[in-house]
Image 1 (cartoon, helix red, strand yellow):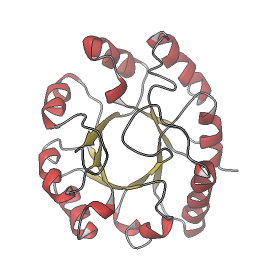
Image 2: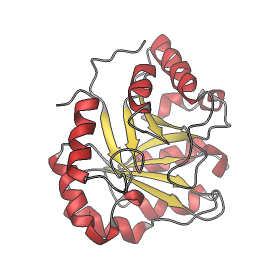
Image 3: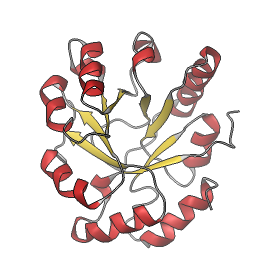
Image 4: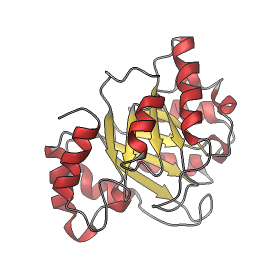
Length: 227
C-alpha cells in the first residue's frame, strides 16, 4: 500500500468543462485549491478526435494563476511542442512513440521553462520509460484508451499504477505519478492507494453532467483528504 498521508493533487480536465460557463468553472477550480488545469491536445491522428489548441491556452492563461497541464496526444510531437512552450511554467506531457528522439524533445521542453513528462498508453509497457526517468518530472499513466472522455477503465490499470509506484519507490526516484482516465468516485480511492499523486478529473467525477460543480468539488476534496 502506498503512503496515503501525502497530498494528492488535482488536475481538472478542461475538455470536460462547461464551455458556456468556463469562467465560473475556473473560479470554482481555483477557489477549491486545485493544482493544475489539464489541457488535452488531440490531432485526429494519434487519437480519433480533435480537441483544444494553443489559442485556447492563450485565452485562459491570463485569467488563472494555475499552471497548465498540457497533454499532447499527437503523432508529430516535435511539431506541436513549440506551440505550447511559450506558456512558461506549464507541464507538457507527450507519448514517446510520437517522436523520433524523445530525450531531445524532453530537453526542448525543459529548456523553454516548462516541466517535461512522459505519457504511457494503456497498451505500452512501463519498460519504455526506463531510460527517460532521470530527465522527466512526472509520468502520466493512461487508464483508459485515449481520445474521448468517459472511457472505461482498462483491465489491469490499477495494478499498473502499483507496479510503477513500487519501481519508483524502490529506486528512490522523485517522480510524480499522474493518472488520466475514468478517475471516478469509485476509482479514486483505489488509484490513490495504488500510488497516484495527481488525478486528472473529468466527467466521471468533477464534471459530472447532472451534478452541481461546487458540490462535486467539495466532495472531491473530502475524498482525497484535503478537507
